[in-house]
Image (cartoon, rainbow, N blue to C red; front, side, top):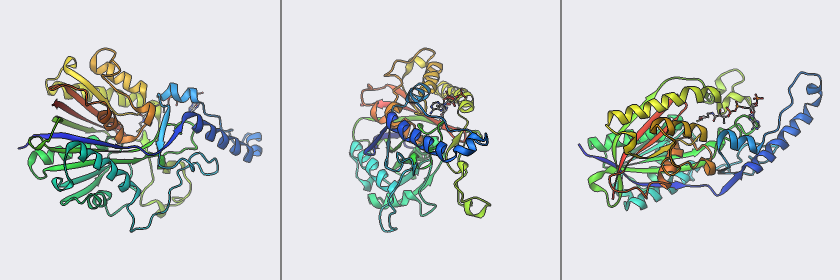
Length: 374
Ligand code: COA
């Protein structure tokens, strides 16, 4: 058996930023247009008027200030209200591959590794742009990696579940090194016309190189242990899928074909599940809260993270102990905890222990306990 380690991470950040102010202006213009279009039905009491969104609410309810997106022109156009992406030919790299390759190259560079040392690509994300061939295989080809690749989807927990799969294969010796890559185009599944959630998501790609610790070229994080759990819930759901056209009204512009959530219930049910999951995982590994130097949590909501951090550490966490990036990136689904890890881990000292945790739809929760080696 080999000891797996994270030797490099990379983050691809799209060029376009949407601020809360821009987002709210576009949403309110859309709401005004809808209210004008359906003025008669609203006056007759057959329809509720759409209400305006507000920057104050967004920051207070979520902590989000900005988000990066692959396209902002469509999202901010009140006549479109979704990303407007160029149609690519089948001979060009797909958009997810393009984002993923950038993040993977950064992870390889940090680890001082070439593609020839990697045997596996796992594309772990909440959405995949096509059914097949697997996006991972396209990424594998673009990077010039021998071996194999596959896609997986556990929504917001995809990255940690992918790291567990990669770490187990490295441990057993079936692969020498694996890239777990999370290209998340959340702007594509977000319903930008829904005031309750239009501010939640952003786009990004993250990559994590998992390899044998004894092959590490420099500072790295030994993977001490991983733990994954799922429990079925409809409180975060998206009904889009390959049977869409086979069902009555399936191809209509239906609300349930985008991200839907019962945010309050998610809060109430996911928080205890995640807090207990982390505490149990730490206890099983003999790690007390005093010995945990850093928590890199899923980045969905600041209040949620504050609650989990306090529960796990038994006190208010210091800002650097539990870094948030959601104010800049919004919720980037599976990539969030990896962005936090990638941007806020270099300063840890030899022997410091930290925990990466992602959670979300499924419900699902995954945790990875790591130890820094200089
Ligand atoms: N602007 C202004 N007001 C808004 C608004 C907006 N954009 N969106 C909703 N409101 C209103 C609501 O209509 C509601 O009004 P009411 O009290 O008159 O009914 C009020 O603000 C509170 O709405 P609510 O949905 O209860 O807010 P919340 O405090 O629960 O925050 C979320 C909403 C979505 C940010 C929060 O529930 C959340 O983050 N949940 C978990 C998210 C999560 O982790 N999801 C995982 C996804 S992978």
